[in-house]
Each structure stands twice: as C-alpha cells, then as structure tokens.
Image (cartoon, rainbow, N blue to C red; front, top):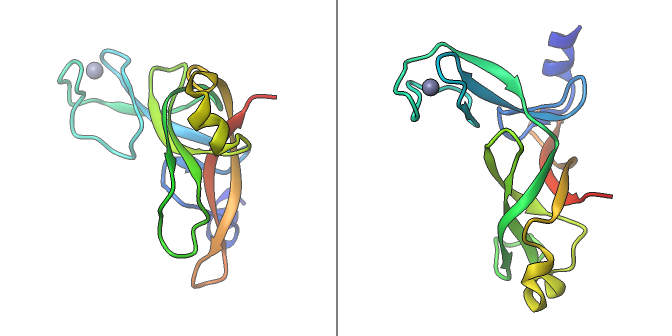
Length: 144
Ligand SMILES: [Zn+2]
C-alpha cells in the first residue's frame, strides 16, 4: 500500500523529504558516533571517518532560523521578494529552505526579528510532473 502511494501519489521534490505517514525530513545517522547528516547516502562520516553503517532517522519538523537572505531576483515566473533561510534542527542538522508567512520587508528592516525565530516545516504543491503527479516541496513558517 505504501509502495503504491509512492508511485501513484504526490512526489517529494528531494529524496530526503518523506510524505508518509506525515511529511518529515529524513537524515542519516552514523552508527559509530551518532552524527546526523541530511543526505540520501554517504560514503563516510565527516566526524569520525567511519564508513558506517548509516541508518535513517526522522528529523524534527521544528527548527530555528540560523541565517537568511531576502531574494529580489529569481527565475522567470518566481514571485519575489521571498526569504530563503538556513534552518537549524534540534538534531544538529541544518537545512536550506524558503521561509513563508513572514514579510520580506520586515526581515530587511528588522533582521533580528528573524534570527533564532522558532519555525515549523510545512509542505506545498509547487508543480505537476510529466505523469501528472503533484510535486511537493517543503518550507518553513513561523511557529504558531
Ligand atoms: Zn561518525
């Protein structure tokens, strides 16, 4: 059943975004030292140089804004300005994503209102692929 929904249902835009049972990011944990990485596969641990084994770990949907940038120019069809940010997750992993539901003008006028701001991950459909499946991306918004 889960396999069917993966081939028939919406598709995540990056392999480390899982949509079932609830949307979340998946990291790889080093079996030797416990370091966690955000990538689909890895040859060796950057912390202890061990070659694994690495296991999947579900990452928190909560985080804090580490740093951000307001984007004023982008590809044709992409509405600007928008905020792109590095989000620190409690597992010690950082992830780059867009920040929504926060005014870009406020971010520029008062940057300190954003640093360390608690945020939560949300997903949204951004496109359809060639087979007509919804393509889902993740982003963050201020925690409610
Ligand atoms: Zn390690």
